[in-house]
Amino acid sequence: METFFGNPLNLLVMLPLFSAVIVAVLPKGLDALARWTALGLSLIPMVISIGLFYAVNSTAPDASGYWFEYTAEWFPQIGAGWHMGVDGISVTMILLTGILTPLSILIAFEHDENPRAILALILFLQMAMFGVFSALDMVVFFIFYEIGLVPMYFIINQWGGANRRYASNKFFIYTMAASLGMLLAMQLIAFSVGNEVNGGTPIFDVPTWLEVWPNYAYDPTTGGGQILGFDAGGVKYLAFLGFFTAFALKIPVFPFHTWLPDAHTEAPTAGSMLLAGVLLKQGAYGFIRFVIPLFPDVVAREFVPTIPFTGVQLEFLPLQFAEIIAFLAMLGIVLGAFSAWAQDDFKKLVAYSSVNHMGFVVMGLAVMAAVYSTLWAASAGRYALAVETAGEKLVDEDVILYGDLAAANYNFTAFNIPIEQMPQVEREALAQEKFKAIVADRIGGPTGTIQDANVALNGAILQMFNHGLSAAGMFLLVGGLYHKAHTRDLRRFGGLWHIIPAYGAFLVFTSMASLGLPGLNGFTGEWLIVAGSFRIFPVMILLSMIGLLMTGAYILKGLQKVLHGPLNQEWKAYHEHHHSLEIDLREVIALSPLVVLMLITGIYPNWILPVIDGTVTDMLLAFGIN
Image 1 (cartoon, helix red, strand yellow):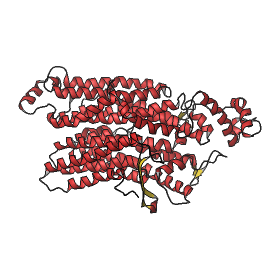
Image 2: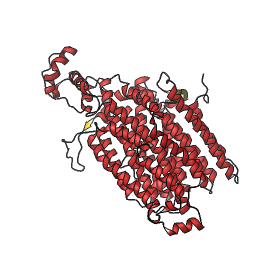
Image 3: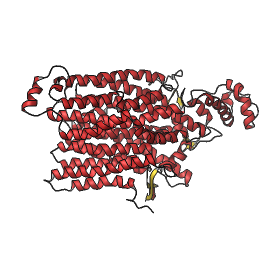
Image 4: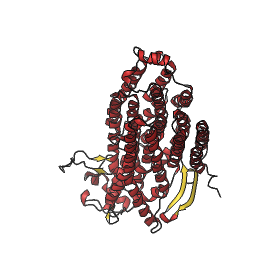
């Protein structure tokens, strides 16, 4: 029998906790030892994460579909167990966490005020991040998800800028409040699934949830059902909103983004690197792991918008949640870019760029939602819903087109009544024949295919990894300049390339990676997202190109304001007589792995894509429809 620490995921999660304790209890006056101890201990999980990634890339998963799965009894009174495991998506995020944590610790060397505390907090945060991406039990996931707020709160609150208390409180309150709905929804699902599986004991096991909850309380004879005495569709809708809000705010999806610029602007450089590099990705990971797979029926549902305070329904504009998510993604891409362009604070410019770049990730999630919901509906025998998610409707003319065929295949009498009056079983039979006709030409969203979703979702996950690299690099460079010049005001810089050419070279390279220059990492993910989304959401993609254009504008604005133009003589004198503004060796060491990965991923993305694609393909083809 495998021991607890014999499993690499348990070891990966617990090592940072032990490391944090070791660093925290070191005696005062041993700050140098604390710094190097923290850095050395953080390298061990990095090596383990690289080994996990290699193993997933080169070996087959367990029978459950996960690698390194470990299950143990933990809290049976509430139905929670210690269930860990990874797939190609989660191991990619674990690799990103393993890489960025030592680099952020190296940058945190700059803090002379209580360095042991900030280093211990970073290690504690590393534990929480690893736990989020490894957990297959919802209680375990939620504990790690929430506990990660604590170290980031104190990192911003104690080592941040002048408005650090406002920013840290806003960050903590927003993210904690958004999780309350998810906590309630978790309880509902756990008791419902437990009632279905074992007659009462709640179940928080994620694979069991994915098997039972999507079709829970659905009566095929009526097309409805009840949960706790209420309409099942309405209850699931509320549960969906709980999960959606929690993860949408964490990404953040527009308009849930307002906490992000404040948190980034006030956070110390090491905190910004991990906040942008990893914590934002937890929101997108939550969509992929929970929101879409748990609620495909809600995601697929069509509803008619209502004008607030009037009750007037816009019946000419029926929408599905996938379309709403795509619309919000477009707003994030476009408005995030315009907001970044409008900034004169260098760090706030980079902060808004995260809203812009994560908008592309959200667009990929919208494609997944559109296609996944269709596949699930068809596999669950809910063909009327599948027809709707494919952009069609059951109409009376379908009785003429498919009625005789449905009657022959399902031993019904001839279909000769309007759709609205047809019994649910016969509606589904008719819808199945219509759906077969749709599949003959295509499958997925309005005009999309499984291949579109595969491309877009691969791109979204790759973009999560790529943005983690480039955003961490940009915050490192901005923070390094601020640490020396004590200002982030772009209007005060100018012509600095004349006196800090090495810094300028790193800034141009990292900015071009963030921009999406072909040959660098940012291009590959965004290209895949656009290619996979265009047929499904063509209008949203075309509008998003405005944001892509403005991305170039704000990136070039930052470069021009800092590096080009006439040299500000104030900085020439400061550089020569007070403090060098050039990038230092510690920053070069921290930035170099990011630069190498940006270049390698841009030139040869196939080192990482097969790991992602294996899980994405299994997810989309799990329903046996291809």
